[in-house]
Image 1: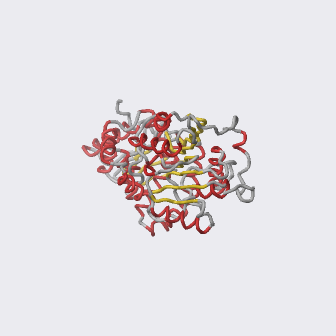
Image 2 (image 1 turned 45 degrees about the vertical axis):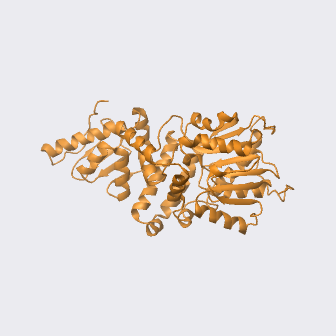
Image 3 (image 1 turned 135 degrees about the horizontal axis):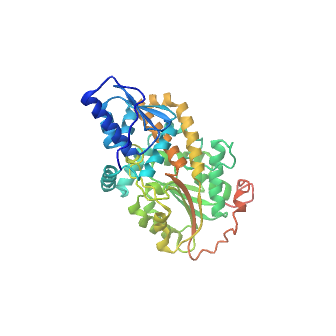
Length: 426
């Protein structure tokens, strides 16, 4: 790809070798990110944009050193500099990231440096039993008080389901929990195993409203302790058991397997192990649902996200996710993409996070706050632009005789009542 021409709306007072170096570096940045309508402003002089573009935001860069780093590795250099406060974005941060994501997709990614760095991450980030525990600890054990600031009261940290455009986050998260249960057509008395249960809301909803018994597995100590306390407080600890253990150690026979937002942490190399676990607990007669961030094309997770937010993460395509199910003959009964719902979910999270920025900075520091703000903004942009999808996959074993619905009509019925008040049995 040839280096693009760069427009100079304002003349700089500098000239000579420094000016030539700056102009060359600016061209390399645009070569790396593609024709994004972004204005780059160098604090030492000059503002620059591509000819004919209408910039949606201005990125203020402090010096030539930072500009050079962005020319070599724009993803890491920009993200790290934004987090430490040396690079600032004037304008809508989410919109700025959207146009960059669109531009990157048009040119096929960040090139050789990004591919090489991702290969190193794949080599050194482990999703072994010990490695997964450390990866999960680094993200989910930051402190429940932190997540309380911007999640809903049930602490649901996965895509909500907005049945109406004006639904609140709380309403949409309750709707998501029930939507999953209706897809699975849970029956009173059934045994359910949940892999990666977060703060426990899904298991409690299944037990309370559908009369099932649940074993829920998680390797985040803070999440498990929160879930156990909540189950005890709500009188559901006799129907829901929270187990601090890895999904690969799940044993016993169950009617239903559920995984909400866990597949992203499994790692592509472990899909066969996950499939073996599913088959071990369901056999050929059970059914299940996997809810996961996905992609419509194969690509690595952002290196910066893996470095600062989600170590060991991988987001699969549908084809890659099928490696879990196909070796065991599981039939896929339904696939739904809830991508717009996840964009809206994170919009709610970011608004609440922004409202608590001062508290977050006091709890940790300003760099931590900017890191997480960039992560949330980038996630919204990813779902808006189609860099990320959200798949729900309903499946069943070859011997499953469960009478699945022939239409989706009943999925859009009102949410379930409490199983005890509806006559269900625990």
